[in-house]
Image (tube, rainbow, N blue to C red; front, side, top):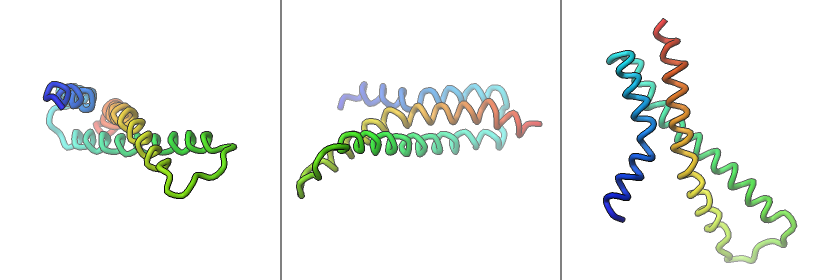
Length: 113
């Protein structure tokens, strides 16, 4: 992979959460509360991967609804794992940015009072 593609993917993956963190740092200064932002980011990544797993499970169930069972040794499970990975790579940054934003705008001001 070219380094430009890697940098673009990192900016897409980390950019929104880093921007929200920068805005909150400018608003609150350096306090212990800002440590909640990386925790929320990581939690969003995990929730995004779990949501992708549910979506993949539903898609697989719909795919196999009126089908006979797969033959032994088929590669269907590996294909669904790849589909889960793609969906997870799409949803995880989205959920990470949303959880960071929710933490920054609702949880941090509540601790400040």
